[in-house]
Image (cartoon, rainbow, N blue to C red; front, side, top):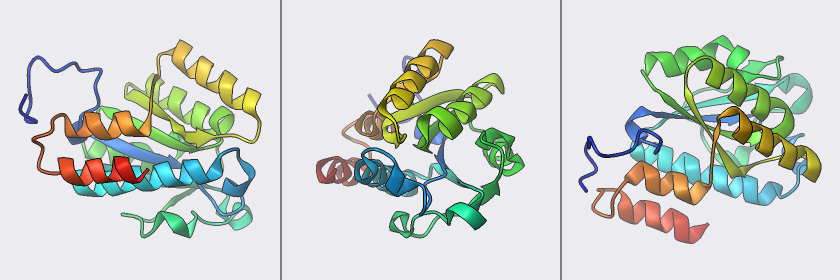
Length: 191
C-alpha cells in the first residue's frame, strides 16, 4: 500500500498528515515524581523525533511553570515555545486548540503527565471538541499505579483510543516503502 491517501485505510488509524502531538506538562519538578519516568521521557523523545521527520505539528504545555519548572531539557529544542497553563486540561489553553485548528488536524496524540489529572482532562475535552484523540500509554504516567490504571480504563471507556509509541510510529509511516521508514525503524530499535 502506498503511503499516499488510500480510500481503504481506516480512519481509526493515525495519519501523520492529519495528526498533532500534544505534550502535556513534562516538567522538571513533575517528571521525576511519576512511575517509569525514564521510559516516559524516552518515548516522548522518540515521538518528537518522528514528528519532526514526518512534519507532525507539536504543541507543548506547562502547568504553572513558575512553580513546577519548565519542560525537561532532555526533550531538546521544542518546535515552538511551551504554552503555560493553570487549568488541568490543556484543551482549556487557547493556544492548543488554535494551533491544531489552524493546521486543520483531526487527530490529536496526547502524551505527558499525570495520566489521571491533566492527561485525562485534556483528552476528554479534546474528544468533546470533536477531535479523534489517541493517548500513548507508554508515554504517560502518574505517581500512583491505581490512578494511572483507572485513568486509562476511563479514557478507553469514554472513546479515547489507547496506543503505544511503536504503534504510533508505524501508523504514521503506514508502509515500509515510506521515505522515512528506515529512520522510524531506527527510533523503534533504539527505544
